Length: 237
Image 1 (cartoon, rainbow, N blue to C red):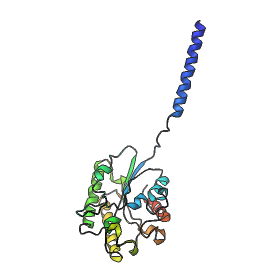
Image 2: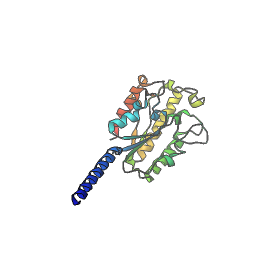
Image 3: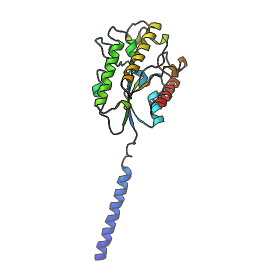
Image 4: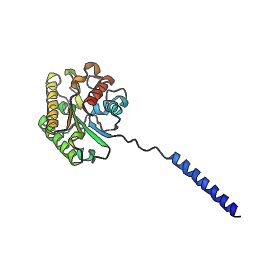
């Protein structure tokens, strides 16, 4: 009888071990222990122009750097928020909700705007307001634990005189050389704010591709997105 009880106990233990092994095999794999990077921006951040989102510059860059990509790109979104209503979103109106407290694996936040801020040529869409609101966003990010060396300001996708449609964003604005001059002023404004915050990375990819890297005269194609990713990778560790 004693031998029978011992045998049953051993049998029960073996069953329990078997169940434990099966249960462990059925658990999902642990999440990848990759640095997390947030990308805030407009349609170029979202990947418009690329043949698929895997070929957008943020995704190409994240694969190269082995980052976990958090892409928050939104078409027609501006950084600045002014008195005029474009009918589209602005990052300034939502940055307090969008920028999370820096998590343990948080590495960078990218703030990539300027094109739409330039194109919506309303009276209040000025570089002064753009600069002031960009600074406010950086200061807020600092308060959420993001040190300056964890912030990247990107401004300056390649465009030319023909990029600025008179119907841009459903509005009717001048295009051509005058708009390019205005665009350069937004790039300079973004760089100045970044430089005033020591440690913030500034990236201007304008000269990394040309008209052959455009998909529709405005957005980069796969080659353009790849060029942007390569350039960013060379500047941001």
